[in-house]
Image (cartoon, rainbow, N blue to C red; front, side):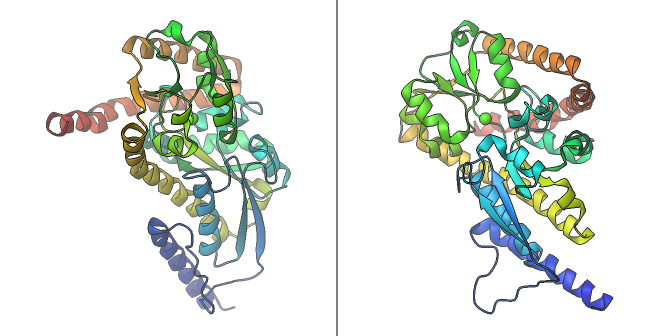
Length: 377
Ligand code: CA
C-alpha cells in the first residue's frame, strides 16, 4: 500500500475511534456498528486477544469498564485486534489475572495493582495509598509525575506492560453492623479490605481478609466476615450490601482515588506496530477517564437510592478515628518503603508528589468546595 493511502487509512481509523468514544458516552454496549455492510477497516492480519478480568462478568462500572476497553481496542484498530473479555473465574480466578497475562494465557488483563501485593508489594502504590492521592492527583502523578515510568520498571521483570485503565474516584469507608465510635471498635473485627488499608486494620487489631468482589455478599450474609468495603454507592448498591449491613461509613480513607489497571503481555505489546501501540495506549487512557466520569455521575443517584429507598444509615468516621487511622497508615507505608528497595523508590516519588500536590489541592479543589458550600450547602 502506498504511504499516502496508509496515512489516510490511519486517519480514518483514528476518526472511527473518536466516534466510538463519543458513542461510548451514551451507550457503551456497541461502539462498533454491527449493521451488515458497515465499513470496517482491517489493515493486515486480525489478532484475536483474550482479556481476563478480576470482576464478575458485566459488573457495573468495573466489568463494563473492561468491556468498554475491549470494544475501544477493537473499533480503534479497525478490527485488527479483536478482544474477548472473560469475567472472574471464567478463564482464571480473579486474583490470577496478573499471572495469566504474564504467562501469555491472555494478552490483556483488567484488575487492580494492589491485588498483586503477593508478587511485589510495591504494586500497591499504583492502585491507591491510604490518605494518599485523590483521583485527580493520581492521574497527575501517573501521567505527569513519573508514576508511569516507575510502574513500567516494576512490572518489566514480570513480562508485563501496565496502564491506568479506570479510576473509581474516592471510595466509601465500608459497611458495618456496629457503630465505629472509637478506634477500639475496630479491634477483633473481621473485615474485607485489600491493599495497604488491610495492613492498617491489622495493626489496629482487626482481621482483614481479601475477597474478590463476587464473594463478598455471601461472606457478609453468612457471618464469615463482620464488615466490608467494596467501592462506592454505585457498585455497592449493585451487590446489595444494604441487605446485610446497617451502617455505611464515609469517607474512604483507605482508597482516596483507586486506579484500575490494564495489563498487556509485554512481548505482545512490544511486537505491535507503533500505530497499534499508540492505539492501545490511547484506548487505556480513554477507558481511564470514562470510568471516573461514570462513577462520578452514578454514585450520587445510587447514594440517594441507598438512603431513600433502602434506609441505609450513613455515618462519618469520627475525627479521632480518622486521625489515628492516618497515623497508622503513615507508619504502614513508611514500613513498606523501609523493607523493599523497589517500594522505597516509588514511595519517594509518590510522597514528593503528595507534598507538592497538597498546596495546590488545598487552595484549588478544596478551596472551591468550601466556597461552594457557603451558598449551596
Ligand atoms: Ca475498595
